[in-house]
Image (cartoon, rainbow, N blue to C red; front, side):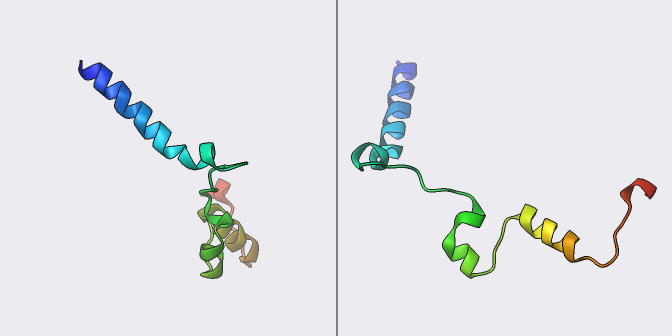
Length: 68
């Protein structure tokens, strides 16, 4: 009985998560990536990978990790 209740709960959760996709024509999930969020870009927030790449590019001296 517990398994059936669990399966029904999972199916209900999946259905509720997909309501927008099912009901909206050409519906899709919005991107969850930081760099594609307009509000975060306006605030100057970027993903850690992009910030690291920019910091390494702007760094005047390079650190050779092979010598550490």
